[in-house]
Image (cartoon, rainbow, N blue to C red):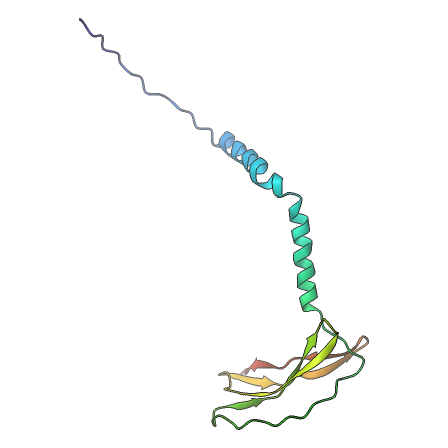
Length: 135
């Protein structure tokens, strides 16, 4: 039996990048984005609401009365006293006093004590913080 030799021609595949990207875009839209399309605005509004709710300051008509407490013994000569401050309780709309504490100073920073600020809405607490020393 005689075998016939068949010469194979290389298969030419034309790759159209534009068509491929268009098909990929359509597939992404239908499989991933479309099912979540209604959730995106709701999630966005929820995140914005949580952000603004966490950033709001609590206002009171008058400053709460300062409760005196004894300062504990200094742990070492390296420690500095950080005065107590106030934390706003959003559930019952009042400020709660937090006691002061000893802390080691942060290098190149100075402690700036918190204070009460007045506005047309009432009184609110500006918390203390470590401020960078500028030279």
